Length: 164
Image (cartoon, rainbow, N blue to C red; front, side, top):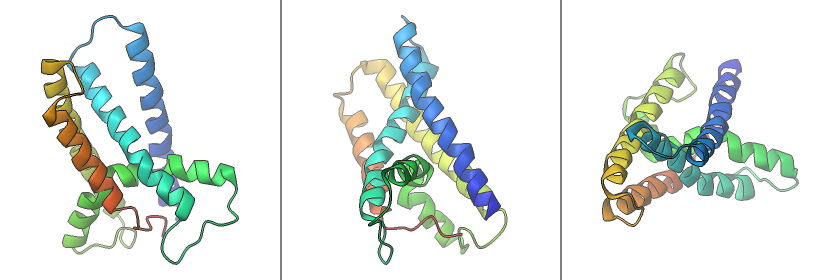
């Protein structure tokens, strides 16, 4: 159970720092390079994972109710959920196909994290390359990336990742 809480701490804090850093970077900097757009791609993934976190913090999971839960716990759940919702159904399915229970074996958590970062980096890379060319969000490639990411996250909303 200790590894699970380290996982939550190690990914909740960087997610919030990434959001704040991206806002600060765009506020202070006058010219933007590829890596700025790459960071923006990661930030957008975190923001697009929030609807799944909102759903989970408001409605809970099947067989688990959120009624009577304080507002602070709901907000904490929203922040804690971003790595699971960013990875979405695709990473959970890959681990399922590999025949591993997510929290059942040692080392699977590391595999989950590596796969999440790999998937997120590929999406951020595709976003950065396209956004650097077009400089607009109203682009069919960027919109398709966002929709696919959001669907991947929302399909995973009923998975109770909090089991330890």
